[in-house]
Structures are given as structure tokens and as C-alpha cells.
Length: 231
Length: 231
Image 1: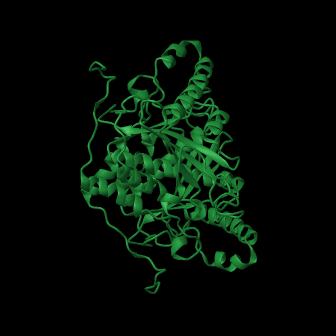
Image 2: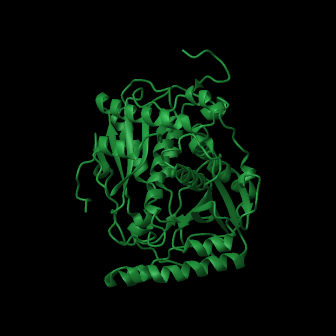
Image 3: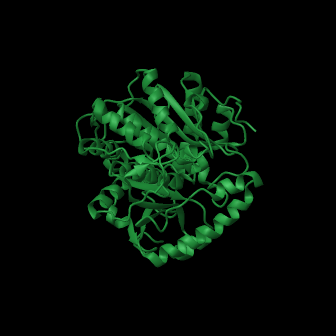
């Protein structure tokens, strides 16, 4: 048994049934928000709590490779929106003809409607040349930054703040708008604002674009089993 | 205003102060567990709740590209442990000489101690050839699967179940052990088991391997600002 020391584990925080349910509910009620943003500015203390939660994400070798770039300026948001619109036209053209008009009817971003945009990045040099846990899997720092996104998203939901992840843009356009140096990767472009209404299921399911499969379909025992999903 | 319809948003779930605090606490008390696993098998209902939470993660175009492969067999875990040990020796040799013995003293996995291992994968073909939100950023499906990992981790913590993410292995070794087809990527190898003791801060900080920076250091306004982190 470890001796008591600053470096020994202690009794773990136990979560009561209602606390555990709150965690499950925030996971179940999280939505990818595009249109429900209210115009009110985010309270600075709320924003600080949300970003602190993001900053508590797991990171490879405790490298904490993320940054959170806050975008509030209307002109800057307009440039991002323009980059989105150009890429979205290209994306629409890639779908089979039968799906193109359905695609065009979807609202896929809240860049200008959301009062705040947050860019989550990953500094590929953070932590030095050799990072514990990253030597064989160099993409681990990118994944750490994604964990920060998910923490941010869930904390925001608990605060009544909606988040929408925009992924339709040319990387070069966004890099120029944000003045990103080459060693910094863009992980997520997030639209953020208070919400009082949300879809009661993922919006793409509600709109008939895609359907959710039951969890049983994605659980396997011992190794990969061929399944209907296989190409 | 949208008319009431199956496709309209509804009043959003509001989280009370104690519920919100539970969410923040589960984020703050989540640990990357290596040694604190208890031998007890995970209750099947608990495991189902945790995997259902993972399955509720955001996914690009609602593609839900993840699978959860459950590893319980001792012989199979021994093969994974062997793959880890070989890679870990290589990783140790890459650190500067002064850090090598400190590295060697760290326990970096609980593969055999944890009663359950879960491999989270990403099927790169899920959702078809053109996936909404993935045409310009093809790595978005990988990031969706990482969001599932973080949901899993937080749900597990609320259930008194610890999770440790192992990233020290050669991909080819793990692919062979799991019989993965080429179109499926490994996202995370997770060790999973009940815990009643945990470190009160990230273990790598407690052990003096790395330190945590304050969140203020990673927040920027409007674009990238050069900082002390820059190379």
C-alpha cells in the first residue's frame, strides 16, 4: 500500500444518484446549435468557468496543447462567415443531386448569430520535442485538444449556453483570419451563445438527414467483427 | 418564429446550481488512472450507461463513426501489455538522459490490472463517401470519436469507474491483436475499472513530471498572439 504523502491517492469523490443523473442529462441534452443563439453577451464569470472546464481536459503528458481564441468582432466574424459560405457551396456540389436541395435547406453555422465564437487550437510544439505518451502516436496532442472541446461543450450546456461546431471552411482561409503560425493546428471553430430552446434530438435526425443507430450496434467483444457498416 | 412541429426546437433543459456543480465536479475530479483499479467486474448496467453516454457524443454529419471493442480476456490483455512494454522501452530511450530514470519510475498503464479494456475506434467509411461537415476537414470523424472517449470518461467518473488512456504502442501491434480492417482507425485504448482512491490532481503533476499552467495563459482575443510557449 502507498504511504500517505503528497504523491499518494486519496479517497475518490463519490457522486450521488442525482449528481450522476445531472452528468448523464448534460450529455443527453447537449446539442450542436446552429440557429437558437440569443444575442446576449456571455457573462465573463460563466465564460471563465466554461474555459476552466475545457482546460481541465486530459492531455498527453499533461502538455495542455490547446489555446482558446475568442472572436467577438463583427467584421472578423463576417470574414469567417464568407469563408464558410464559399466552402459550403463547394460541399453542397459534392452531394448526389438528390440530396443537394435538402443540404441547401440545412442551417449549418451560427457564426454571426452567436455573440461569441471560440477557436480551439493545438500547439504541436507544446511540451517540447519529446512528450510522454506521444512518441508512438503523434496525433495524441490533437486528440487532447478535442477532449477540451467536449469538456467546454458540456460545461456550456450546464450553464444554459449552446455550442455549435463549424467544420466547413478551407483551413488556409481560417488560418489567415486568425494569423495562426504554422506550428498551431485548428481543432474546432465553435459558435457560442445562450440558448433557451433546443431540439429534443440531434437536429440532423429531427430533420431527417441522418438517423441514430442503437448503441448495441457499435459494441464488439474481443476484436473487430464484420458488420453491416463494413464497405 | 418556427411553427410548432416535430422539427422545431423546444424549451431547453435547465440545470440547477447543484446539477451544474455536479457537472463541473465530474470534470475536475476526472483522472487518467493507471494503478488504482479495483478487480471487481463492471456491472453490466453501469457499462451500458457509460457506453450509451459515449454514443451520445457529437459526430460529424451524425455519422457516429465509433465502435467500442471490449477486451476482458487475460491472454489478449497480456498481448497488449507486451506491445506496450516494447514501445515503452523505446519511448524511454527517446528522453534526455536526465529524465530517463524519472520516466521509468512512472506507471503508465493499467492494462492487466483493470478488469476491462475498451478500444474506441473510428470507421473512416461510416456515413458513406460524402459526409456533411467532413468534405473540407476529413479528420472530423476522428475528432467525433475522441468526443465519445471524453463522454465515456466523464460518465465513468460519475459511476465511480476510473479510466486510463494508453497511447504507448505501435499501431500495427494493436491492429493485429484486434483484427482491425484497414478502414478502421484506433482512437483510444482505455483501461477501465472501479476506483475508490484517486490522485487529487493529475498524477503527472503530483509526481513532478509536468506542471499545469493557469487557464489565463491559453486564452487569446481575436487571433494568435505570440507567447512564451512559442518555439
